Length: 339
Image 1 (cartoon, rainbow, N blue to C red):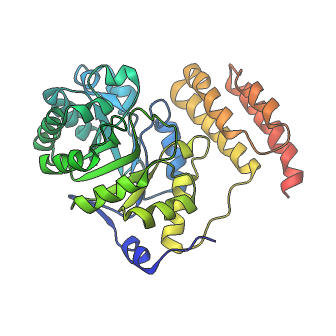
Image 2 (cartoon, rainbow, N blue to C red):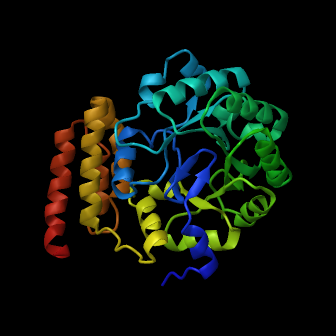
């Protein structure tokens, strides 16, 4: 049983205000490279109608040269509220890209200062900015001056255990003009290993006046509530817990609003969602979408007899029809068990 303290309940009953933007959900879907495309967001939105969603992270240089504008910053009808996440190390490019993102419909501009991947940090973006707070400050200030929408920052607690600078860094981002900060409770050197250190999120929350969103190990209603209680954060952001499970943001949001834990989807429900996801990827991206669907199918297919075999088969599909045939057969097989 998940229990919410009266203090947390009172806090959660209020909208989340990010500068000029008011959100009626305190649960956000993290930007995930190669995952949070328009197809995936459509499924998350199905279960979380008022949550803030994020596009995949996009490099400002690509936006400025219009190489990635159509591919990543493609916002469909019914996707609001939505934010576009940018990364780069050059304030002028970031400002120019932010203006284009706002023109595409972004309600906020999120700046990635937390991605731990080498190909991002080697370019001076992502979590490398934790080691360059002056550059990070200049980026936030340039973007905030360039666009009329709120600017937010997503970062980590530090570069490694010897260089945890979350509180000082967060204060600098707020002073530069950030109107919300999302903190992943791991260092860059941790990547996604080991438990998230939520205590640092609590310390940052206590140090700032802008909203602070907790990120890291938010994988269930229970973990979301526990994190909110422990940190005092203003909301939670779901990341890897949504891989193959676009229900998560909606489940947490529903509980925070109603106090009732939603019934989890059955294996059949998950396979039907996988089928919808496959169809959307085909609709939006054609053959490339089918190939991208393989990893998603692997994440969906678990928790029932024969899942391993089905997962292996779905990871080899080359056509949408082949995927439908496999999923339809598995759904029919589960129908008798779940009825």
